[in-house]
Image (cartoon, rainbow, N blue to C red):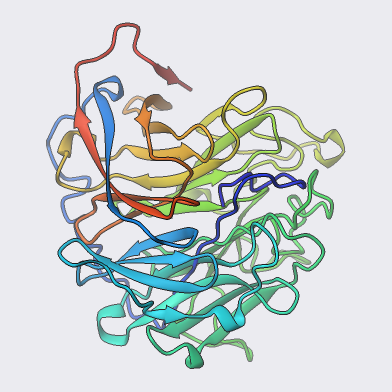
Length: 414
């Protein structure tokens, strides 16, 4: 989550998100993205974009994850284990549509319901995939459950996480390939105490990729044959990328299937990584590195290739504290902003825009602020943006608007 999801002495409010799961069919087209990547609208310079937020719901209890449904509703996960439904025409429903509180360990600021996502065939099955910390000892848990039927939860995969309560990761999302991706933190506390980031023998500090449409070898899922470590001795075959500290929030761009990952830093920098499908097996560096700076030389290995973040920003001695990974805008309300990745920081609330440049590399800019304590971003069926605010319990709709560039700009290139 965003709330200083990395400090051993956590002082900020924690977030957690749920992940939805169901038996999948071939991936359904992502609503609102049919034209993504095909529009001929000229992209606006980042310095000419700004974000405007409109609060549309309040009264949520520590909202931690959000996802859109085909029928126009948004599902919002609350840290305690409940899921609420919002529709722009009818507002926030009073009663939860799913209650998993009996299963969820909320004993620490960062434990709870962490991520949710609908199955690609949700319109037919009503299945959600959820990620949470489970009772009694906080094990990181990936499960699927029919909406409204908590007694039918099926646990798919777990990872022990008893010693420390922080760094749980918890995002879940389906890729264009129909596989389910799940992020897990490095095990908690600080300084990578278990040296998980560079260890391929554990799921901690990784993003996984599994096939939840099939069962293999007694497990309720299969490992895709093209996962990068399937034939590596001693490695967990579920791993897709590694070297992560606490990938509290990642998203998958429906236009190209690439991952955008917000990885919470130790205290020096916060980072955003962009991993395309061809980069499977990428090593993002933790805990040899924190962002691009060296963090622990003993975790660095000669000849190992580390993948640099595409955007990093200062944490130390600033108002920033914890990156909240966002999404690539693929909506239609602001076509000149399509293809722009939008993210924030839990403490400073700055709105970061990052975009690949046609000539290579990335451009970035700060384009305003979001409401207080942004914990998660999501998109509705049309690809338009929403953001959650943790302790106030707000849901806000986000518009990206075109403005006259400020003198001096504010963009930075990598």
